[in-house]
Length: 81
View 1 (cartoon, rainbow, N blue to C red):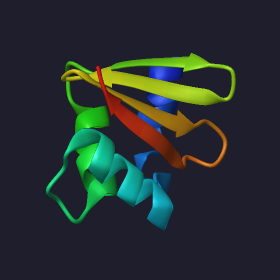
View 2 (view 1 turned 90 degrees about the vertical axis):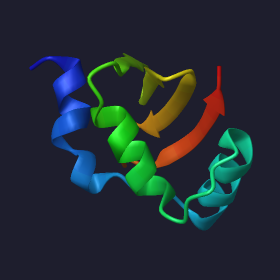
View 3 (view 1 turned 180 degrees about the horizontal axis):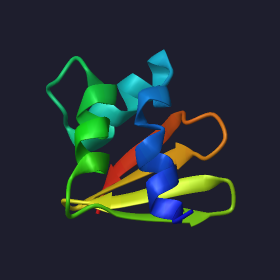
């Protein structure tokens, strides 16, 4: 199975912690209440480049880098490029 598709097939499992929400809103200057939905949209976009390094997925999209744990599908953090 293509590694990119594994993350896309499991988007329904994507989640984060309360601290993760705060961290991502601060790092990305987001003005949305549903950070997980925002991340799902970015990950699912046609221009997203998804790679896996060790246990984490890295999604490079629209000048953002999202980090997702490959086992629990927890969004760990996100940064602007």
